[in-house]
Amino acid sequence: MQEDKKKVLIVDDSITNLQVIGKMLEKEFFQVTFVESGFEALALLKDNYLPDVVLLDIMMPGMSGFDFKERINENELWKAIPIIVISALYEQNDKSKAFELGCVDFMVKPIHKLEVLHRINVQLNTKKQQRKLNEINIELQEANKSRDKIFSIISHDLRTSIGNMKNVFRFILDGLIDPKEDFELLSDAEIASRNTYNLLENLLFWAKSQQGQIVVHPELINLSRLIAGIVEMERGSIVSKEIELIEAIPVDAFVWYDKVLLSIVIRNLLANAIKFTHEKGRITIQASEVDHKIKLSIIDNGVGMSENQLNKIRSKESFTSMGTHNEKGTGLGLILVKDYVETCNGRFEVSSVLNKGSEFSIYIPVEED
Image (cartoon, rainbow, N blue to C red):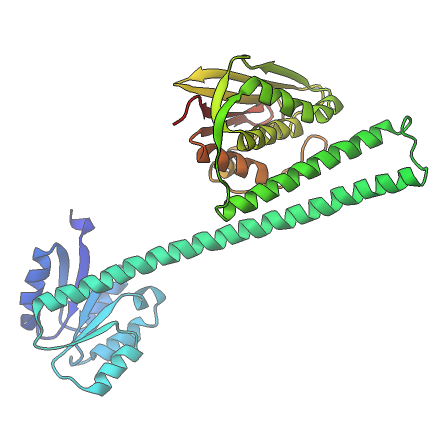
């Protein structure tokens, strides 16, 4: 298609000298445009014509090739266009000046048409590679921003949680807390200690995953027993909020998964549901077989999420929001969930309605795959 062709602009006051090259380039599926002066070339650029490569003569009346290059260097977009100088005379000063101005190559007439084709393709490939490097660089910058944000939140939350627990222990030792009268305070401290442990465990595994150090060891797991153990670990938070927990997991449901990673996934999803469910709310954990996989869903009737928050989860972008009891979080848990589910050949889905609740589902293999 015409719009897919790479565009070559030839700027030379003696067009006949380069018509053979132009025809050859057209046969190679390039879109070739000829102009006889730098003024005409500038007019094209100003009219939003953006070539992929320019073949530029030096000796032209009115505006030399060097003058033209100096003019386009004033525009950042035009400046990035690869320019190959084609000159009738070879002077070292001319060649040096061409490179000083940012031209990418220098050829002396008469030139061989296959050599021109080769040099154009070299510049196009270089441009393509540079574009990929720029994209990778942007991704790395975004990853670093996300990492720094996560570490900032984690360091703040760790200081706060550990500081609070330290104060509770100090009060106990000083006799300022009565275990019976201040049971609720101690219960909150226990929940905080458990959340801090989970946070540290998430951080450890996230750091390993970033370095590619996680080794997956899938095995046959009884899903009902695994979830029962995780629920028991979170029992304090469930009781504290008086949440109704419904477990609908078949006792004979087995999955093929890494047990440690699956435990982290389910624990994070359950902790997330507890965090965003109101007092006396409801959480349902259910499982069913779908397309030769077990679909495990954790459904709550809590605060729900906006479309913007859902998009961030799908793109693995960290974000934080306070729970219904002002619980803090780092946004790291759901990033781990998506990573680990996909690592073990599973699938992760999320749906939510603001102020109605959320449903997080993972599709787990039931046999070695």
